[in-house]
Length: 159
Image 1 (cartoon, rainbow, N blue to C red):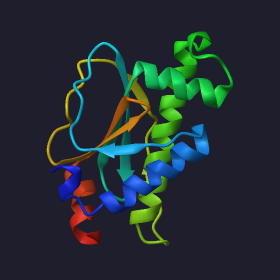
Image 2: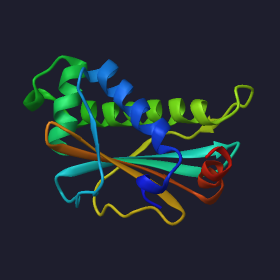
Image 3: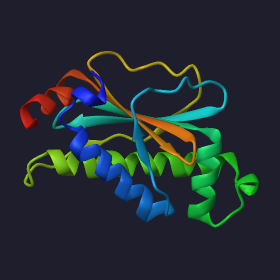
Image 4: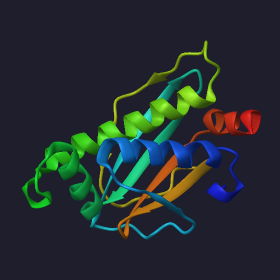
């Protein structure tokens, strides 16, 4: 299912815009088509354990990752270490997933997340069912995936 078909688009797009503006003072724009990610990108994965099971994945072009982590850590993009960039990507995914789950679950419902894990190509779309949203900042791309039967089933219940 693409973002155009998802009832969650009205939640995730403003949420990511707010996070990016507050974290890195950048404007993010949603786009329709997912770019082809290759060696010049990195990803992070985060499992949802409770009250549903699923996974969030965030894939980001290296140039964008360097740019954003440099803003956040106050360094020039070419001075950033891979460790700092990875930490930023992990924390960004953790923030997005946490804020998103807080928005879609009832106020009295808590959730449990795993520990973010970094990965590199090949970047495979998670197994179905999956929802995806694509974004661009200053001509550089990133994609968020939400996957897993019970996680994606919440979309139908909240949509």
